[in-house]
Length: 554
RNA sequence: GGAUCCAUGGGGUAGAGGAUAUCCUCUUGGGCUUCGAACCCAAGGACGCGGGUUCGAUUCCCGCUGGGUCCGCCA
Image 1 (cartoon, protein in one colour):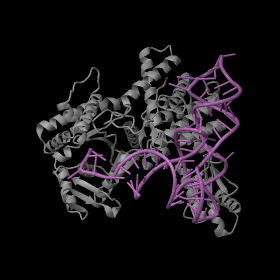
Image 2 (spheres, rainbow, N blue to C red):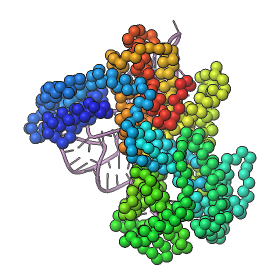
Image 3 (cartoon, helix red, strand yellow):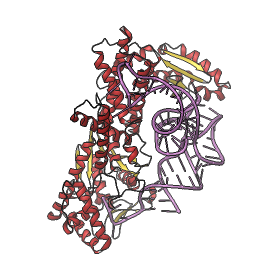
Image 4 (cartoon, rainbow, N blue to C red):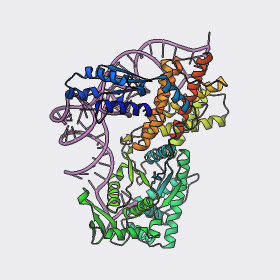
């Protein structure tokens, strides 16, 4: 949404009509902006909306500040079409590096994402979290926010105790070429099978959990070793996905440094607190029917208590807290928010995404039912390499491998980020491996094509005066980019950027097929090259914000 | 049982209180001695059901149906 024109038009309508809302809507193919105020004035003025629209247009046209905008009534709609000066301004901004960067902010943001339990490799559900989180992180940085991205390491949960038990009691050899996280999953799955057979093992696991909570050095060391190994595996996967964290925060630190105990003591004094065998909060007055347990009868803290301590710490160090969590965390997320609020602490904003399941049902690390992100990455690179080899047989192999890695990454990230977080999805190998058409590679291709034109063109004089319908349509699409970045960070919906990037590529492809660039001459060639430069820059900025390589050749 | 999210062409998806509902796939028909066909153009096909709010609802509210998720001294 073009800010200056939007504001001018809105102000003018409000002044003329005296209404509280200018009822501005997207003009679609009719206009750049439209207003439906004529409808709402109809009853008060006792006139037909069509008549009112015509009168308003006459008034609006008298306004000097709207001189550059074509204003016309079409039936009851008032349409605004922006002029050439506007388009020139857009182009001038869009050819510059960093187009779409928003003014620097001072609000310190902390964003937590992925935070998968270190008991097995990241699977295709976890990476939905990673990719939504990482894309949001990139958008926040582009929007000018100082940002820290954190991974919360759950290193003292029951699953880790089960892993530790498995390493102590089962055949724990790492297989040849087996990645650390895959190794841990294998032991974890085996240990769970043993527990199924022999319930007394649960008792041994409980003891391990008590030991770790009390800081028994040997047990702490054991837990930490396996958790670190698993994280090493995660880091490889995340590097392949171009996902980065600034800091890994360990859950056990919040027990060790006393923060958990401190927040529990504070919570004990709350009217909602109850202490019998366990310590829990009754949040019924806020609509939660179950107990919010903080401490077990054996005195150990549960996840919720440590999570509260973690969030209190985040609140002390940052102005805005954002967590990316799966739909399974909706209830505990809401309880966390509720508790932080009654404590008078900063309340985190939570971005929930719905589950990724397999055609045969839900994924489960414990049951060994999952598709690992590593397998997906391996497969897609293989396919991308074949595709690159078919299209570009003349390139040396290492270059084809590099392109395949970028294309594969684009396919995975785009496929995941393009879908609204609130939609649950079913993982499908065939669709995941299809990187053609409505995909990341499609957008990369548009960028590569624009790069190729610019390279062939050589030096040219920038010209910002566009003429044809296709040129102007493309410039207006380019104009939307900064507003898209703004929208992503205010609505916390990275899919908006994914859809925009695809639409920009669509518009460029249509332009490309309608208008000659290199074969045109003089100022026509100059202005079209300028436009190609602007769209290339915008595609590149969009792709980079999506965490996708804007490769120049593919 | 309670809570919560989702429901758009055959399949997958976007969108928004307003003008002819987006894109991919699919089917059919066109376009490469070309600025890169991982592309473009044309045609076909969809807002689950019932109420309500509104000048106007596919979009907001309620109910129903179907599906996901959650309701543990797990995390």
